[in-house]
Amino acid sequence: MADNRETNFISAVVYLQDDAGKVVPFFAQLCAQLEAHFENYELIAVNDGCADDTVKLLREWADESLQKPLTILNMSLRQGLETAMNAGLDAAIGDFVYEFDSLEMQYDADLVWQAYQKALSGFDVVTACPDRQKLLSRAFYRLFNAFSGSPYRLETDVFRLVSRRAVNRVYAISNQLPYRKAAYAASGLACATLRFHGSAPSRGDARFDKAMDSLALYTDAGYKISLGLSLGMLALTLLALVYTVVIWVVGTPVTGWTTTMLVLSAGLAGMFFILTIAVKYLNLLVRLTFKKQNYLIEGIEKLQK
Image (cartoon, rainbow, N blue to C red; front, side):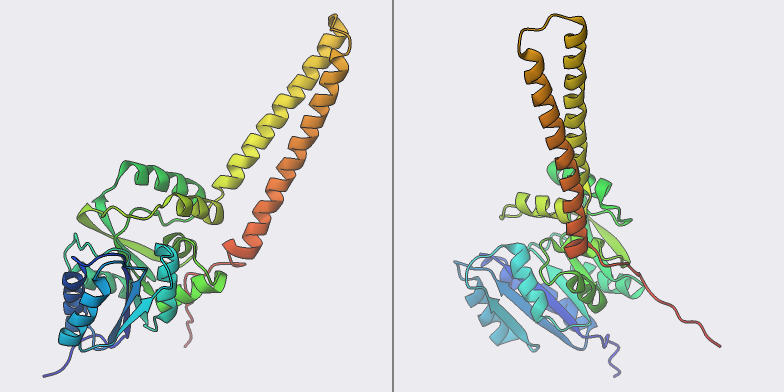
């Protein structure tokens, strides 16, 4: 009987953090999907300092049930989701790479295969997103999308599938990705979203720092807000300067008040003017050293007779 499974090599990178009760059911469902649709695949489990029996249970299950290679990356200490998953991506060699940040499969397992089918239709990044979003997450992504300049809108996701071209593209920009989904969205490659009924699992690690990093590196939010505040303070200082001159001309200010106000207003105006210039240069520095390549190309077509 002919084997109709896909020949592309698939990598699945899975984040582990004290998931003893979930690790075996998750890997069993994942492997069932991969085995049914792909001839060759590898599993990469990133152990981010698990303190329970997660890794032990995974090894026992692999010894009994797994036929394909499993790599377990044991981080030296707990380093957080993004750093640990960067290590997993470095180890992955697949033509396509699945990224699973959580072992809570609150979606139909067939969505894994659907993501691959969607990728074959011309997308380098396919994300699986729930139709219910938490209030804080929705507010953050609305802010991010407003300043990102990307046609692809970020939102809460549960896993993603990325092509080798997408992985190579984002690592060409930076060898360390502080926030992977933002890096993929800023890569200029075609992105798509698959939706399912449900919500994303709560994440145990703090996401605030990553959110702030992503706003600074992948959007103009920090620059525009800082520039707006600097220009606003500069305008207020100049108004204070004008007010001081008007009082000196038409009023009877206290001795020494005019001189003091002129010096303070001029000094503050100069400081905020310099701050405005500094913010602009910092924004340019981020763009040149990290944020983007010189240009972004989604794809190249060559037509010839």
